[in-house]
Length: 107
Length: 120
View (cartoon, chains in turn purple, blue):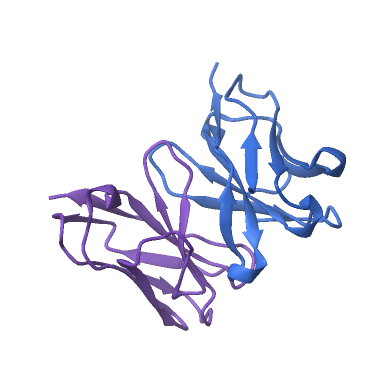
């Protein structure tokens, strides 16, 4: 199975801050990576697919980059509604493993 | 618009079984596979399984074989997850999601989640 490792597991930040979350795959997955945002009590929401493609309707302050084994999700200017948990997921092969999550908290 | 609507919360005793439904609307059901995820209280997302809605063929993650069974009723555009011999550690929210082939096989549409509580 492909293991997905996210870091950090949590980050405290202020509104307006730039936040970067990393995700590492245990083997190469090309660009088969998605990022999701989850708020408490809600289903995850797709933000980024194929490593760097912004899902329609998602604000442009979110961006993704990387290929192979190392990936990054960046929030350029954190907004109040961005406080949530973020997950990466590889869509290269089964099982479609998720990273452990990164909780973005208010500083 | 695409919608996945899951069945309601369940409270079950250890050893019982539960069957969760995921009803799809707004698209041709058999054109897109359905995935299932588990999220234990306070924990992250765990991918469980996938079912090919065209053939009915399921694929399970290790740790989700045996007691976990996926099925379909294409006449009502519904996928099912049945869990047998329930244990306390099966207590979790279970999500279904539709894969999107033109979005890198990501999960664009999700059900609202079904909470299964296993307690005596």
